[in-house]
Length: 104
Image (cartoon, rainbow, N blue to C red; front, side, top):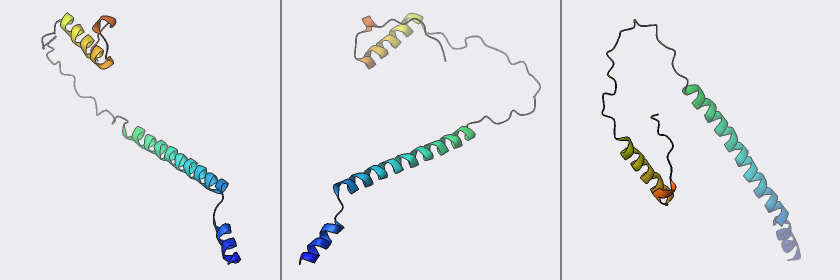
C-alpha cells in the first residue's frame, strides 16, 4: 500500500509545475495571437491598396451645381450637435462650446 501512495504522490504535479505550465500556456497563446494579428494586418493592408488608375479618359466638363441641397440653418445644426454631445456625455449643454463644424 505504501508503494501505491508513493506512486500517487509522484504523479501529482507540484504547485510550481502547475503555475509554470499555466504561465507558459498563456504566453504561448499570446505570442500566437500577436503573430496572427500581424499576418491579418499585412493581408488587410495589401487588400486595401487602391487599384491602378485606368487609362486617362478624355475630360468632359460636367455641369457643376453649387450647393444643390439646401444648407441647414447653422444655429440649428450647432444646437443639434451640442445636444447629441451633451446626451452622450450625460451632462448639460451649458458646458459645451463648439468652435467649428466642418463637413468631412
